[in-house]
Image (tube, rainbow, N blue to C red):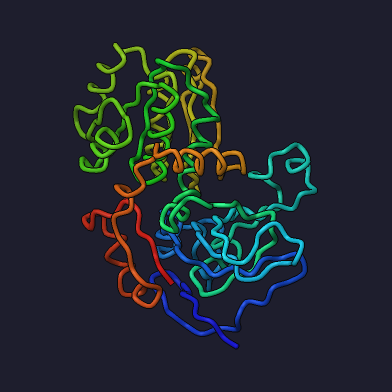
Length: 338
């Protein structure tokens, strides 16, 4: 038996092909992906700028799926809607033993290190599934990227009234803005796309949007009375932007790098020490983040309908991908339906 899969054979080349059907292994759950969200990682794969990937690859790590078959004594019965924790951790390294599975030494990410969910069937161990009952398939496909943003905010743990700056208003930056606002922070969003930045104000609780340009640093200084931000989050994927962010952190503040790039990031050491800056990396998300995001969506606290802007079938995706990668297309979150 065979199944369909969208395969990125090399940078710039996405094809729909037949491949052997997924077979459920011992302790695994056979899934039918219902929705697959696309994100910056997938676009980087298409451009050839994802640092941890070899081709060919089936992309797709933002997954909502229906359980097709599981062990008789398993947790998930056929027909249950689940979202997928796509960070396949070893469970035995020191990070895993300390409860830090999201940064496992041997981490394998669906759609990056191994084939992902742009396909008709997928089989995974039950420990990577989260019950999404009460969510729509579209909403369940959005849990992963929202959880990445939520995890970054929890790393910084801004207090009520703290000044937070989110640089980069892609979907993950938007998720950061949303969850920082929900913690009570005063959020400023900086981006070169005025529509995306303003979306964070109109829909996600941010206080102000600043358009990247000649006077943007002046506007940022005015927003803080020249004192800098208590928490700065970079979600740009740009080495230059990541380096520039250090100067925007106020004294005693923290800087969270959500982006990952193949580059060396440098900073001015005297300023770093003078401000006693806390520098944090934020990688992926945890099961606790997923659970919190699912609860927030169930409670109607996440404007998922507004964030979901584009859709396509699996068969149509190869023809739509170039369009969606163009910033002028207006994509916030594109979702594929097999």
